[in-house]
Length: 455
Ligand code: ATP
Ligand code: MG
Image (cartoon, rainbow, N blue to C red; front, side, top):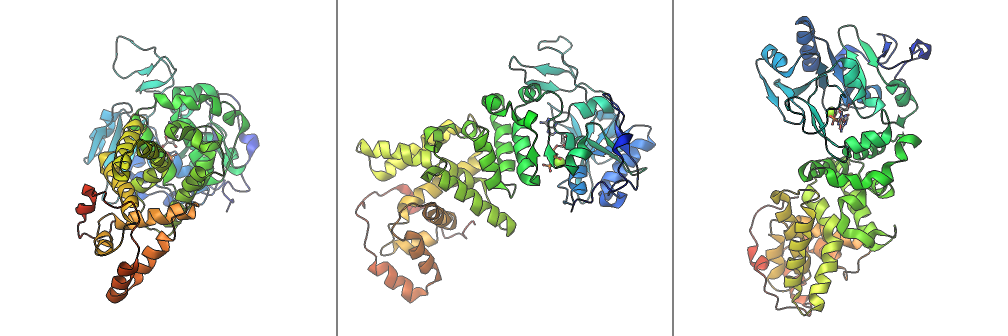
């Protein structure tokens, strides 16, 4: 796979000193222009023809060099957002923290970013507009100072993401040794690691994400401050952190990502409610979460749908169970205890990762159904199968059993029930003994809608 930077790649070419990129010319690397989306090339061409500097940057160049399919193509340019906008009819300026321009094509959107600088102006700067600001923890709160391509390269996160490709002459401009790091498969943050992580703690998650996605190793200097700075994740806004966790969990490398997050003390910052429940790598909680990611990775590989609701339902389930047990011990019914615990656990998680309501609702239904699926005698089984969340709840039962929870063959029973014809189903429902804790007539039992399963 790694005939990326070809035999002609000559490292002696590299001039030392900040701001001098290594320029690897056409034929000396494995990229050819038509690997880049036509739309991205068009954007660069229009910008260059208008007298601006422009490159295809970031993840797409990295991925192409590694023989992977890029998710999207980003363009970086010396043109200011307003200057970009006038050049493309179907374009709009978006964002506050980073102002970028989206250029719409029929097949894709090309994101165009103006070169930015690392220059820091302290908080409270009067001129306010278009500046870079830092909070007390050293985190960047605003980042709109424009700069040169060299400035732009130095504020990117990883060396392997600081590669600038010019389609007009098919050259790669490497500002930070990214090509070498791709060759030796190393994840390395640019600049002083602790400073860069404090500026934006999400960069620690990105280090882990690319490590798992690409199968690279993390450079020792980069890794060193991560555990200590993991607590800085609390400065990241909850909606952004939710989005980042989804990228981590639904990358197709969820299991590897989970263990890396765990190792660097990042996971406990994302789901602090699990607290001491995750002390031992081999306990039920870790097994459940590991298994949830294994199953998610398998589904993604099989191109099946995965939903953040299922993943977050699994992550928070140990906390819900723990709290529900406490409410039951105080004499509450199982369904009341579960519902109260679910509400409280979700309410505590939202200020960390803002899970949208469209996911918390199904999460609660999956949990509620964990109490209802054992109660399957008489007409109940038919009603449960028709529940819109049945499929997810059934998968959740299987997950719990795979992780080692003892549920008296509940998963197998439901597997057989779904495969059975009407007659057999009736026999199965008639012969099943009801669990002893009946009588909890929750509203959820009545909510069965005859809609298609969601999974
Ligand atoms: P992918 O899209 O495959 O997840 P990517 O590297 O393209 O990976 P994006 O989130 O699309 O990631 O970001 C595009 C580029 O912007 C990155 O390659 C990197 O250079 C830069 N970047 C993104 N996030 C940060 C950050 N938090 N700090 C510094 N630079 C960043
Ligand atoms: Mg990208």
